[in-house]
Length: 58
Image (cartoon, rainbow, N blue to C red; front, side, top):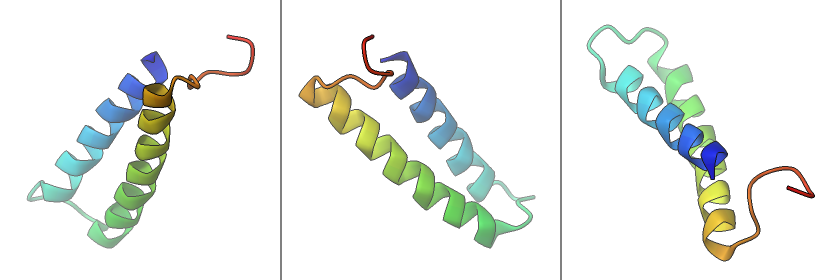
């Protein structure tokens, strides 16, 4: 669950970087945002289903 919370935090930081007035390389940041969103969705669904987000055996 900690991994999921960390990814949510990183996703929030990426959103802040994109909407900030001094955002350079905004197109690259949008690509990173989409990738982070997909990874976040995968981890949230794993946490909801109960499969866990850690390595096997934990």
